[in-house]
Length: 151
Image (cartoon, one colour):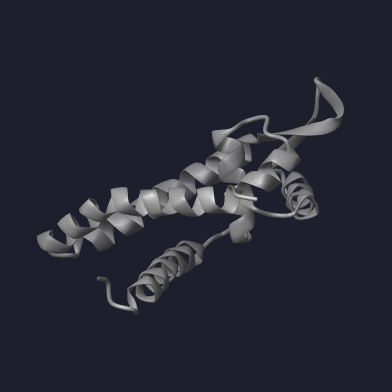
């Protein structure tokens, strides 16, 4: 039996780590920071070039008009290209620009270096515990995703 506080402690720890990583990566940026939803959308388009706005909204669990607003900002800022879908002239396909690819690559490299430095500061037992927790955390994410998909 798990202690009553375990789910809350886990959620707080995950949110805290994510928040601190995001803040550390934003510090010292020479370009305007991207909001979390903008980064998520860019990462989704990177993984699925040509994705449409409605499919992106579904994947990100956002309203279609919210994703349209994000797309408009990212197009204006030179990070996304919106092309007409040849299969449906009313729909748009989203593609990254070179600037977005470079920005994501820089972000991923800086994030990996930051986390690597911090993990290296932990003792071996803590590193092993984190390594062992990764499959369970992925399953937790999958469960959350599946539950959100249910009607």
